[in-house]
Length: 91
Image 1 (cartoon, rainbow, N blue to C red):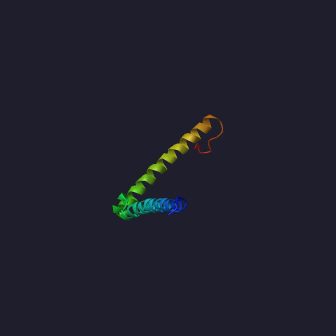
Image 2 (cartoon, one colour):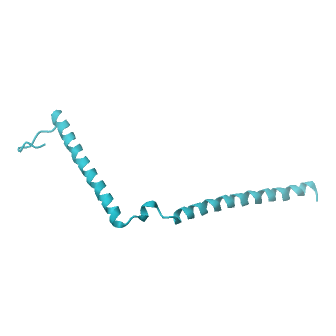
Image 3 (spheres, helix red, strand yellow):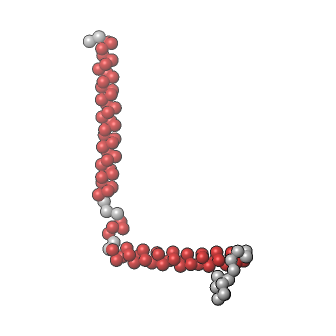
């Protein structure tokens, strides 16, 4: 085989090695994603009632914090003369 023809064989083998490595990398990534999706999330082991109790408690905390912030904002606006009390003396 002539040296000029040999380069075509070598380049073909290099290309095949590159494609093979790329395929194996992509396959490993897909396999890792499949395994990760197959495992249940830690929260999935809890019952619906447990999740709802936790979420309801969290919502109550957030609503109480929101009411507190509303009162603080209204007080600050009143001190800045941007908000007046209504007839009942409420903000």
